[in-house]
Length: 284
Image (cartoon, rainbow, N blue to C red; front, side, top):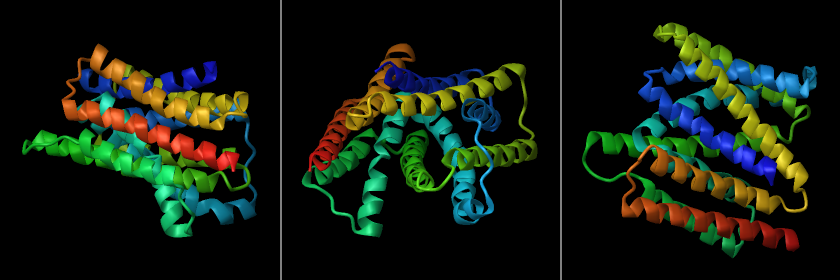
């Protein structure tokens, strides 16, 4: 349970850092650019992966190229969403992306969905509807689109990561993905001539450590609680939404309307239904 709590804390700390970036006038792109070489180096220190052979490159090249482009792009969208819509709603939108792999498996591979899965999927869309900002204000509309981008982007990334996990030498390919993402973001930062400061660079390095911490602790939680994977699944998603709400509303004073609160409740209910569906499938 300790590993699960640490993973939740790392995940929410990433959003907090992205929130602080706006107050300190740090460019999110710079933080993201420094995040990936830090994550790659930390992953190499922890796992010491070997380079994939030619066959692995041929089979998995499209995955790490797609992830190398998508990971930093969606990360920047997440940063903008945290700044425009707040930690509470951005974290909830990210967690609700878990439904996209389910829908893709049903649409693309004709996998059967249980009644509880269908209820969970319906609740996810209801939660998203409540979490999105309403109104004619330009900022309100921008926040809505950013939240949709977070949800869709992380959903697609989840699908690609699941495909990556089926490849040989997963850690090696993940390391290559981080390196590619770092190179692309370095080029973007240079092209944009982003203002660099020591504090922003330190924040970018911390962002990389937190990201790897989130991944490593989540894997360790699954290892430590291998008899209860659904508990880890539910605990991670509900934990991030709960802690994100406490930090966003309690510490940063983010204003939540009644419909946003309803969206959070629906999100937790959706995760509960999807967790029950996993438990039922495991029992069967």
